[in-house]
Image (tube, rainbow, N blue to C red):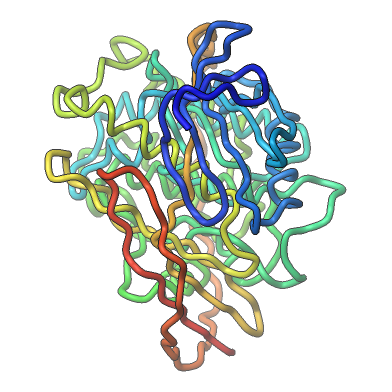
Length: 405
């Protein structure tokens, strides 16, 4: 409860979110005098997965990755203490049909690519990179969060062979085909995000999550310049390379970061303060960060997550993004309103990353793959326990779709 001292160190201030898998609290670290996000595991949740998320986060230390401060058990509850990120998520900055400024898009993409480089160098693949998992600190620095389904080289996997966790709108072709994710899979997801930043829309859109997965696997995405003729050629070419069907044709994350450095330098500052509409919602923006933290406990099979409904006084929300698991022979997709939640965290002391030298990427033809045949889709209602969150958050019920090929 608010005011309680948790683990003899963290004074709980207010709940940030609660779901079937975990709860997140804003707390004050009384030893270090800083605000943190305390995430506790629900009694019936997957403890092994919770520990896996903590170990993945503990292996990383980078200005563009959400930091893990502490891990342990108190009052019979496993817990982790994460950096408090009050700036909200990238998903909250996106408005359908409205691109972000090119310099800002380049800056965000570059810094996320730098965070991915750090993770990949340590044998970790995120596997679920998307705007909801990119959070901002008080200095507007983007940070990758939620490593709940990350693959750690040399460790076991979360799912059976041929089954992958991811988000339909950002999933790589190889994940969509049931093949293992690699660092190039994260680069593909970052390419989808850059496409969205530059155009205000996703490359693939469909009513059914599995159709979006199929499109990622089988179809060529549109060129950025087909949607925005004035898009910077360098960024449009880089996006096309990142969205190549063949993982080997995608630029490494370090090259990706260097390729957008020139555009990032055009930004007048690290990032302006939040627009007035966001400043009015200072209590609401960090809630999405808390909700992202709750996602570490979602599903053993394929999970599809749709964004939470936005409060009436916020700007239009980013397009609904279901999380999906795809298998080569049988795939089960769950669309859940329990979000892949995020932690708001304390950041304050890290300086902005140094801008890398500019290099112009070579344009690579987009690879094609033969279309695959999918069987009919049957929709089966599923029952999900209600999720309790802040009064400003509304969650929709869960539906399940089974597909056999």
